[in-house]
Amino acid sequence: MRQLSITGLHKAFGPHPVLKGVDLDVPAGAFTAILGPSGSGKTTLLRLLAGFEQADSGTITIGGRVVDGPGAAYVPPERRHIGYVPQEGALFPHLTVAANVGFGLPPKERRGPRTGELLEAVGLAGLGNRFPHELSGGQQQRVALARALAIKPDLVLLDEPFASLDAHLRASVRADVQQICLSAGTTAILVTHDQDEALSMADRVAVLRDGRIVQYAAPQDLYMRPADPALALFVGDANLIDGHLVVVGTAAAASQSRAEAADGARDHPGQVVDTVLGRLTVAPSIPAADPAAGAVTVLIRPEQLEISERQSATADGQRGCLAGHVVACEYYGHDAVLRVRPDNAAAGQTVIVRTSGGPQLSPGAAVFVRARGPVVAWAR
Image (cartoon, rainbow, N blue to C red; front, side, top):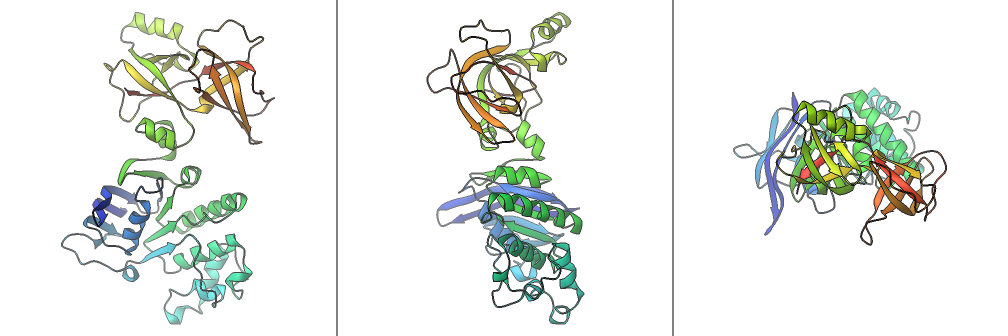
């Protein structure tokens, strides 16, 4: 069952189009993130789903009911049976926590067991008599989520609800929210510009760019097989390098390819790409690189690169390796990001390498960089 279905959605403000034909299907019980930069249209999309704005054209169906579309009566927010969690929680300061949670319930149910059950579900049992100012930011967001879930909605909309929290609390609260929605079996839409947030929380991520969804996929597929180079740069760190596509068709060529390929390509004859980092397997991409393309752009994520220190700055190169020098190191405790300038690179050109554990290399260190496939390639 599709709990949320969006078809051909358009919205403009005056002469400025914001949404330009959005299509999206979200199954019941799924947690989906709408990810996009500022100005991509994600706030407008959320407001259309909530009913705060009306679409110019297209259809929105929630829980099997058309709430906005041609030939159907527009359904206002209070009749859409949705829960909404805004950025700041927007709790009523003059009401207790319990009263905030029960605000959307019928009067007879506000003093019933429902509010206590929800407060226990969000880890706030026993705090019902407190007021919002007596809670931490993370606790206030949990109250806002409990209030949204109180009516047992068809859909919960989360409008960047963790943006105002500090980094440690943000990670903790979003993990709690994810688990609460999962336990409740609630269909949830999270709108965010934070890539880490989208990838870590959602079952599937829809990337909105310039008013259109450019890819809708599981987080791992979105990260490792982005639809185009611009999306690769938007979702995490990325190395985009030039390559030449090679189709290995004969047994002899396949044997030669296995012999010449870097580690990631040895067991996968077929479509490979030659780069400054050696010959690498090409993973299925979206869309797949045209075998006749020849010149391609290759995506290599920083964690696909291995780095080792050269014994001397003038050491000869190794097969399938790129020789260079470390120009910067960003240390994060759990890992580090190194920026390496290839010895034969133009000024300013660097390769990003992510490492974990072991001694860190200092700027100026002479290194070899080796890549592990498979990689994604797009025709240039």
